[in-house]
Length: 192
Image (cartoon, rainbow, N blue to C red; front, side, top):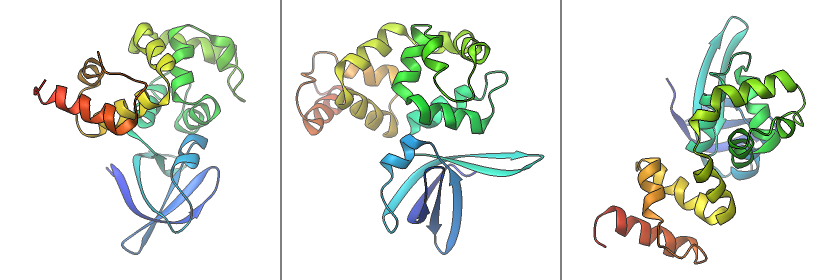
């Protein structure tokens, strides 16, 4: 399995990216979220991947961060949601909005994505609602992007999601990213 690609972007559009890794160009299908986060042609990039082999072809799906990949993997467990539809969902509403819609059982918001009807939206909610803590999601949404970025950084460093959340308790989330991350790492290391 190919877990990630690290190299230079040689081609990029709204649906895919080609990354040159030591002279080999790997094409990965991406969401609009990933498209907006990975940089431009010629930039160094790391994308996390998921490999899919089906009767109609072999596909590599790419993600800017592990949180988006995790959501993708959860979406493709839903009956009737394949990998291409899952990428379309992530690009259509974004990870945080998807979690919020599932936690608050907002099927109407999911139906705004082209190709997702009422039945598919309800199926996504029913099959995934126990995967997300409503309070955790809503608190993440209200704290803004910095908290989400810090949580993502902590998870990427190997900490469990629950430990990462606990480490932010009592930290001023109005501060800058580096300050919050440093404080959280200190807590996780048991120094405070």
